[in-house]
Length: 175
Image (tube, rainbow, N blue to C red; front, side, top):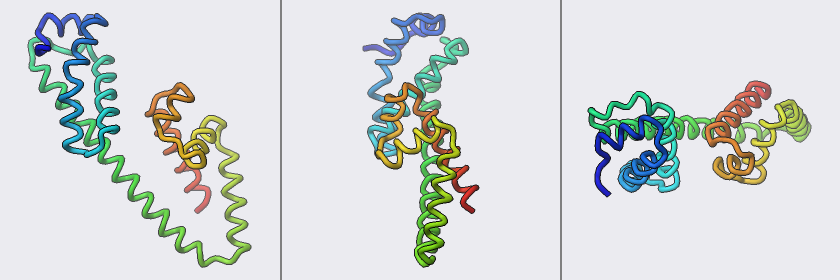
């Protein structure tokens, strides 16, 4: 398949599904290969590829067929990878804090542990039904963001956002 030309990019810009499919398929392998070379995770590389193309689809009216579309795509991919790595780093910091707190709580008396568990249950119950469902699917059923998104027919970003908000509420109420 040859690189998208100005005519194909103009058709894509104007909303042609056929043009979108051609552009989408053309960049699939190079974008995923590029992403894997940086993040070393094929599944996340696939997610990044889809996220970038969903953003391109939303912003297709801004595409200038006269400019270097290849650079545009790979800059978008690079930015999405940076966002992913920042989120991953934030998540690792939260996990470390969680384990530090958990170690500190292991020395508590059984009554205090029971009171904390009861309070945690109350906080979880106070979450909105959808947020609580997403939290339970992730923590208790060990489902991935993608699995939850597919089951609930919502986007992966919605799952991420709901989990971040739920964790924030739990952390705030438990301190």
